[in-house]
Length: 314
View (cartoon, rainbow, N blue to C red):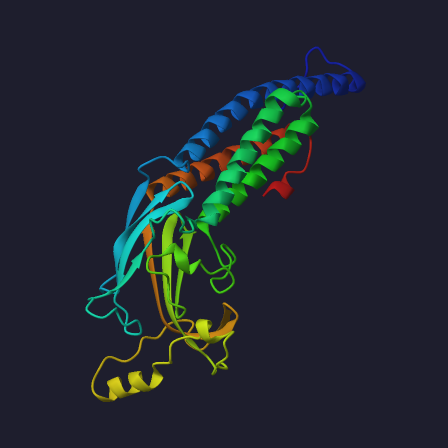
């Protein structure tokens, strides 16, 4: 079965008619994309609202599985952790005298540093950039210029993909824990030098990783280094405890590694990772994934009508 134009027209005239049809189709698609852009803007504004610093914020439970190692809650408001009260019961972290567990409490003092979640800061910045791209595509630039709209859609997709990837986290997101330690004075009492606390976002969940540390080699006892010296290594005590029937020291994926932490070579004695799903972050991640698909399909549709190869968009 074949389709022919009736009455028949010459090949040159047919080419002219085909070009005119493609031009009308391109014009229709560009007008349709303006509605798509407004829909994308609404979705982006919803994502921004989910990450906005709105009280009372999200209170999340932190609890280690099948153990009492970590128990407590934290409260996130926008990009900040404003409250936190977690009790640690670790083999290598002796509690204060008379206390059943080691307290990890976010300080409420006005002068205390703020615990900022840099990943959420980055996501909010990227979403704001996306909103700017939509506004430029709608009001400032030439909405009837296919090349301009194609470039804007590409930029929009890249920003949304980066925002989504930042909420999902990964090997390089955020920075390694030993490179960017939290300020000890975020907590009350301040963190001891042999304790590392890392707070990050992974798969739209708040992840808290606690590490107890020991110096991997003896440090010179000088006035300059005395205050940053780690507590003595508990290796001898641990071995003696095991010989008397106590539980063996914990193992983890960093047990044989050394790191430069606060200017000193350290090893990780004990490591505990706890995560808590954040409903707002989960909703934002789901919306960003949906928006990314819409932008990708819009880019592909425009590329097809413009006669361009869509393989680069995969």
